[in-house]
Length: 292
Image 1 (cartoon, helix red, strand yellow):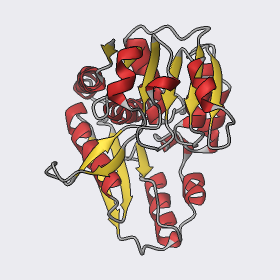
Image 2: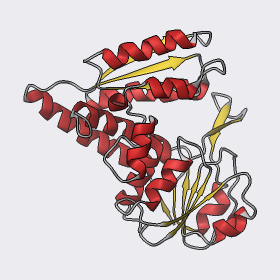
Image 3: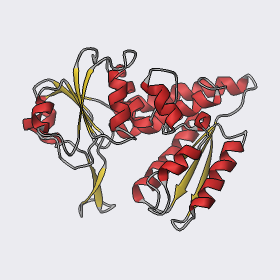
């Protein structure tokens, strides 16, 4: 069993990005600028945005954080998006999800200029990605694909099961694994209404668990030699930890890991690669790789 080290992989990629940024700026180019809009005080969102700011420093990016309380109106948030769309110095920006219930998330996503949509959530980027055109790709699926390539894990012709059908992970992950120039795999998407998830998983060479249920994937659902990618990051109360909680994946790691050829840990697996992919998308936006 090989443990897939997302932290080390992300560190190496961020060093490469930093070197490229240094070179761009030495030649008189513009410093890439990533902005983030954070609404409220969701613990997971706070951590993600804090790590994003740190990653920007490591990559040599300019970073801006715009904060709102969770009683912000939809109109105020849309006005903020409009300002960022028009700000020539901002290459890319994210509006951190989830948003408070009184705000229509899809409306906010649709308002973001797709050329600055480094989260890869805008329908134009989703559509371009789905047919194999260059685009910003949702950060977590892009990070997973980067890990699979980094570890030379064969995906072509393999059977891949994606657990979960969210717009952020499940759907784009399935699309990438299907695309000829990415995964080139045979893909099954399982969700809450799938009849026999255990049977589907036992047939899989690669399982991507993004269902949001701690310890959902157990050893009796995984065949010998499978590759298991755990996207789950649920905060589980733990009095023995300083913060009072631990991060728990969707995979029951201790019993599943011995059966795997490769597996990601939680934390330290997919998480660091999500931030790293956001940096890659921001650099691409700054270089205008996809859109002029």
